[in-house]
Image (cartoon, rainbow, N blue to C red; front, top):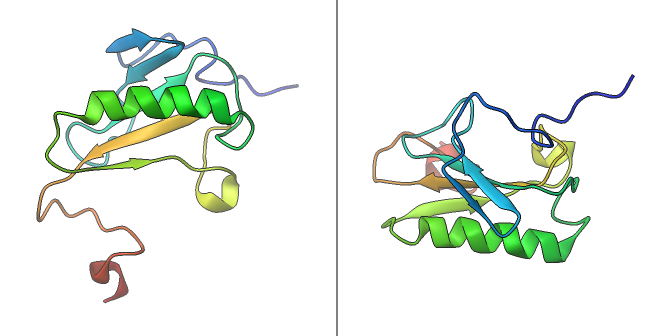
Length: 112
């Protein structure tokens, strides 16, 4: 039995905030900070390495969506060892503000 991809026939629970150029934008089930969004390919692509042109469209939509933010992380993962938990291309847009409590492994706070 094949697992159902949660993004291939997306029907919620978060509303689609934008649907543009084969990409849709939603809030993840567990946002890490307020305003955290996902830009998701409508086409089933496992990750950015599988289809660089599709990744380019998803990244473009994510960047356009993030343009109004003063600071953000734009992150995608490729493979389980890189923390990819859903095998469908998606890009996280994570707004950042000083003191938001989110530490990433390459920051000095994570090395304390």
